[in-house]
Length: 286
Image 1 (spheres, rainbow, N blue to C red):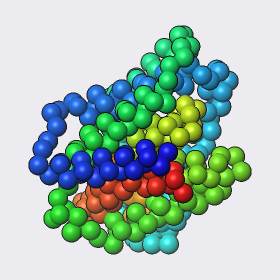
Image 2: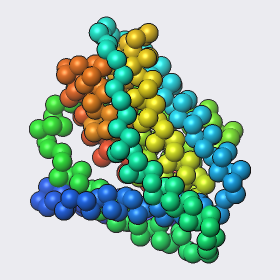
Image 3: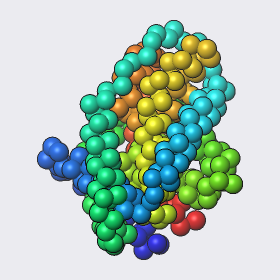
Image 4: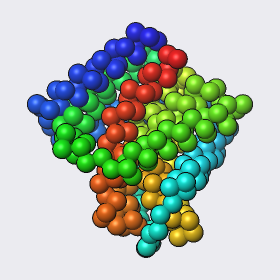
C-alpha cells in the first residue's frame, strides 16, 4: 500500500507541474473517469448481493445527509447577513454522464459474476487518473487565482476538513475510522473518492464512497438554499460543496450568495481539488 501511495502522489504532483505546459485533448478526462467508475461498479456488481446493494445505497444517503448538515452547522460559527434567493436546478444531464456507467457496471457485474483481478486493474487506472487529473488541474489554476484567497475560502476549507473528521469519528462504530475518513475527506469528489476507497477497502466501500460524495453534491443544491433562509452562513454553504464549489455547484453559490462570494467559492474548491488526491493517500498509510 505504501508503494502505491508514494507512486500515486508522485504522479499527481508531476502532472500538476506538467499541466502548466500541456493541455489534454477534450474528452480525455471524462473517458478515464467514466472507465474507472464502470470498473468499480462492475467489481461491486460481481461481488455483492441485491440486499447488500440496497443497504449500501441507504447508508450512503444517510451519511451524505449527515456530512451536509454537520458541515453547514459548523459554518454557523462564522455567521453573516445575507439576502438569499432560491434554489437552482440540478443539471441532471451532467450527472447522468456519471450515473450511467455506474448503473451499467452494476448490471454487467450482476449478470456475468466473473472473477477478474479488479484490485490490480484499479491500481493502474488510478495512476492514469492521477496523471489526467493533475494535468487538468495544473492547466486550470494560476498563481494569480490562488493569491486571491479570501477568508471565506480558507475558512470553508477548514470547516470542510473538520466536519469530515468529526463525522468519521461519529460513524466509527459502524464504519472503520480510516475508511470513514477517506470517504468523508473526498469533499464531494465522487469520481475520485469511490475508486480510491475501492482500491483499499473493496467494491462495497468504493460504491459507498462514490454515492456519499455524489449525493452530497446533490444535497447541496436542495438543502443549501433552505439552510440559508433560516440561518445564513456563506462559509458553511460553500463548505458543503467541498471540491465541487469550483465548478458544478459554483452556479448555485453565485445565485444564492451573489457574485461577491464567487471567488471565495471557486478558490475553496480549487484548494480542495488540489489537496484531496494527496490527503486520501496519506490517510491510507496512517
